[in-house]
Length: 225
Length: 225
DNA sequence: CCCGGCGTTTACGCGTTCTTGAGGCCGGGG
DNA sequence: CCCCGGCCTCAAGAACGCGTAAACGCCGGG
Image 1 (spheres, rainbow over the protein chains, first blue to last red):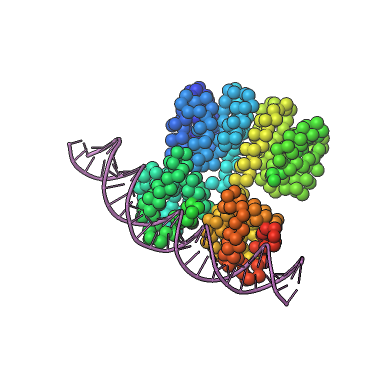
Image 2: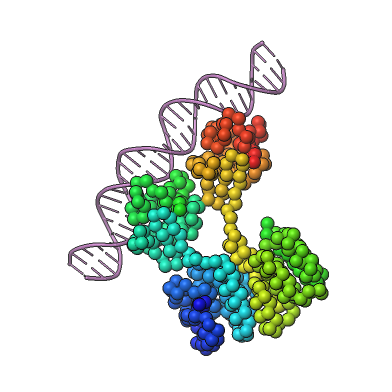
């Protein structure tokens, strides 16, 4: 069954969508603000997200960015703003479609079908990267090795996540430091050595001769599959 | 370059789109009716199609069906009809987006970017430069020879990268030194000799008679494909 | 309050890479 | 013919970057 995550702070909108979508055989999840939306998305892995931009806590564009960090789930934006700058902003942030309120239910459903169709055409599979030694589940933020879950600290996970989003590709030290520690620490390459040593102990079969967490001296690191 | 097929029977719309798209670096193809649109699409394999529904010969929905018969190219529909039944029909026929005329150019361009983004995400291949002896993967920063990966030092990679970004073209010594060693060393042409010798040992079949890393005496070097 | 997990920081040994200089080769011009 | 500039090769010391271990301070939970 196709699952839809509806994110809106107006209860009547959520209710209307829930009724219509359920009636058509969709599995409906809901959230009323950006934070919980991101949480629900991670938990429930919806096939498509309907997102209102006017949320109480986070800016809608942030929510889009948060989702796009780990998934390519189609996102249909709902908004009362009709000006093109809002549309451009949302679409360029990674949204797939933009519908202005008030909207026709028929049209929204058609756009939903179009989005889902594309989504399955892309032929999903969860965002999972696997090597011969361990498996990285980007959505669940978990790493498994021999079926057993390996506990990673937040910093360790940050590194693995960046690498797993660029499987096989070289990631520069600067990029790793920037994305994990922030722009203030792009020169603390020592952090990388310390943390890669830890990660290798946790994830590699032979930490002294890593096969997947590869150092490219002077350039960066690479997750070899 | 991204290519766009614009299909519309109103010349002024086609002209306006051609101007705007060309200015933004798109490669623009055009057609004024459904039949030729299908022909051009088969010939030119555009990355995205902008399709007006009110064509003189075939119904727009037929055109969508004709395209969907053999491809999943993103289709953005343009139409003066604002009623939801038209939108539903087009979207269910396989269109990816539906924009009503008159439309804002900014918005159309944003929707175009969104459509193209999805399209390329589906296929995605790294930019690769290959010679008969070795393959340079710019994104992954890898060089392979006979399928086996060749390890390059940062300086060696810097040289290969500059050359690979200018395949077949002559790159002056000054430019190489500038990009790899920085503006302070533009006269150290000895560096180039040392490093090209190393690169030839690593990449050429016969380092003494290079076929790809070519010296142009007094001028610079060239990556011969 | 104590303890453990986590992030940060310092120190040191080691292998690799960069730089530098010397010498030989080759072709064009005097 | 010889000279000379540009190029290739080789080798050795210096400089650099990496891995590892260990210690410190912070914080939250038991």
